[in-house]
Image (tube, rainbow, N blue to C red):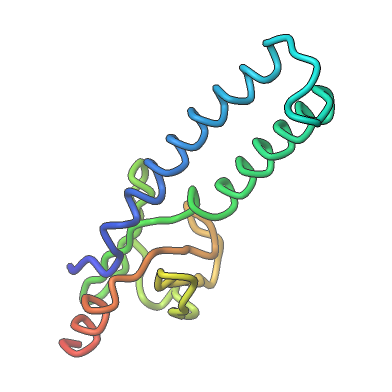
Length: 139
């Protein structure tokens, strides 16, 4: 069994969202509870609405992107997937496709399953390109 996902997965899945949620959550709460009438030339009401919109849109972005990342390991007969809380084993016969694409500075892998699995039908992970190439060369 060989890990083909990158070590960045753990950092991107947990550290970045938690840091962002705590920092901007505290900023949002402080902007809501402190009394002020203007921030620069912006009225307080519009500033608060903008801060809330920024915070909620960030939460949604993390929920639909980084927090869906999984760790993927491949063995001779199965693919092993974990979200660091649940560990699932899928046979290669249940995998429809495996695609790798480039997004910004990351290689993103997408595993599509034939049926809905415990972690969903589409599994996204950050690919360690060298490990994945080594795995395919050995097999």
